[in-house]
Image (cartoon, rainbow, N blue to C red):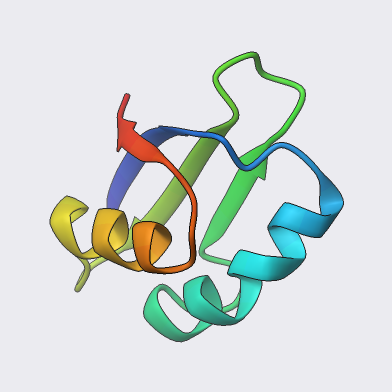
Length: 69
């Protein structure tokens, strides 16, 4: 399993709710989390099949900012 880390602007429960369908579809339920308590709003994705570019594209399409951490 690869673990990918990203800085995002996903900063509240509403934002997490907005990206949940996309991330559940791309990474799978339970394979991602957002640390909204961290100043960088860190998104961690664990997956064997996803690349960093795929995660970035999915989050940007959901309307949020993201960059590799």
